[in-house]
Picture (spheres, one colour):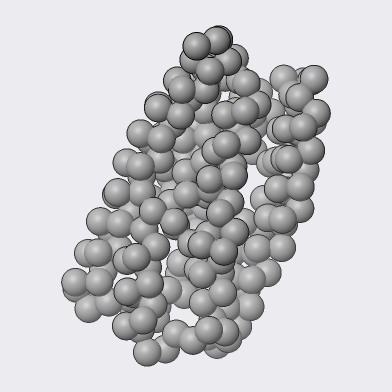
Length: 210
């Protein structure tokens, strides 16, 4: 096994452990909601409000990473990050549309989202792979809990196809963003210190999101 292959196995093993643990905790949280009365309209609105502020201008993180000196010589990965940024850019508008269809407003950004942006806006400048580690969790967590999410959606009478677009998209069943993101991240051949940043960022991102 050559050096790159060893490195890829190392990334996949550590990162997938963090991703799967975050997914397990997320499923447990959702299952708790399912067994205690289901998903309330207020909780769903608060979720969409959080996601609106979390994803608004999210493209700047990935464009910042693509422009970082550590990406020098990684043209294919830079191009992936650029495309990914543009794909993610309009997602906040989908959350806003779902809220409007529920008769709800965007409202102010919650504290946890303000803390998220305060931390990652700073850290992405010096340790861009940490933000990529956090994205690894966010891009996969919905898929790992998709069965419970579907159960909650089916048992909430106020939900329709028109106000659940954000959630459905982020289960990533049609477009497997999580799998693609992890593959591209692994193939970017990060250094050992960058691998540490990926895992650390995944842990931080998982804790803050959950």
